[in-house]
Length: 367
Ligand code: SF4
Image (cartoon, rainbow, N blue to C red; front, side):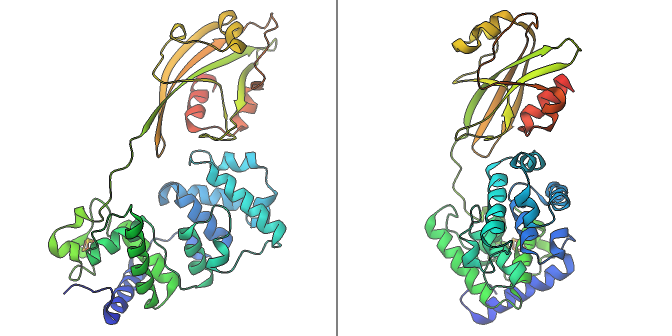
C-alpha cells in the first residue's frame, strides 16, 4: 500500500519510520554534537559546497581557527578565503564573514533565533535557515534540499519537474505536511537528509533493505531511476584563460612572481591569479595572441621559459581551460608592471588565497 501524503496516519508513519531508521544508521559527524547555531550554520554552508568526507576537515579547521561567531567576525577576509581554499564558490566564504561581522556588531554576537529572522541574513536561504532553526532551536520547519526532493519524489511518486516553480511549491507543501507530524523536528530533518544521502541515493538506492520499500511508489513501479524528474541543465560555458606568469630572480637568488587580486563580478573574486588575457577560443602559443599595450614590453623583453596547457576546472556553470606562459624578466632593466600586478615572493604567494587551478600551477612551477 502506498503512503498518501494527505493522510494523517500515513504521514505520521513516514516521519516516525525515518526517525527510527536515522537512530540506527546515522553517521557520527561533529556538527551533530552541537546545538550552537554558529557551528551548524558553518557546517551547512560548507556542505553546500562539498560532500561530508571532504567537508569535515574544513569544518574542523574553521572551528579550530574561529570557535565563535565573534572570532570569525574579527578575522581578515583573506585568512577566511585561504581556509576556504579548494571549496570553490568563494562568495559563500565572503558572505559567511560579512554575516558574522553583522551578527557581532548589530546583535552582540547573538544568532537570530527563528527561521524568519535567519532568512534576513546575507547568504542564508530557505534551506540553511530551516536547518539552523530546526537543529539549533527545534523549530518545526522542514528542510528541502536535493536529498529531500529525491526521497519525496520516489516515496510519494511525485512526477513534477523539480526545476519548476510549481513543483517547488508542491514539494514544499508536502514537506510541511510531513514535518507537522514528525515526533521531533530536528531529528526528522536530519533523518530525511541522511536517508537521501546514504539509503535512497541518486544512482544506487538500497531498496532491498529500505524500511519504506512497501510504501514507496518508485520501488513498487520500478521507477527509482526516473524520479525525481529534473530538466537538463543549461549548457556549460567554455572559457579560455591565457595566463602570463611574469617572474624575476633578485640578486639573492629569490624568485618573485607578479600577481594580482581579482576584482569585479566574476569567478574567484578577491582571490589572486596572474596576468590574464581571456579569449573566445583556445590560443596555445604567444604568437597566437594579441597583447594589451601595458604588457607588450614585458612579453617582448622577457624570455619564455615554459608553456603549460593545464587546468580544466569545472565550476557549476562554466569550464575554464587555462594556458600558462611562464616568462622570466631580466632584473638588469627597469620594466614597469601594469598597475594591477604586484611582485610577491614565493613565500608570500603561498599565503595568498588562490583558486585551486592557480595553486596547483604555482606549486608545480615554484614549489
Ligand atoms: Fe528510495 Fe528505494 Fe527506499 Fe524507495 S525503496 S525510498 S527508492 S531506497
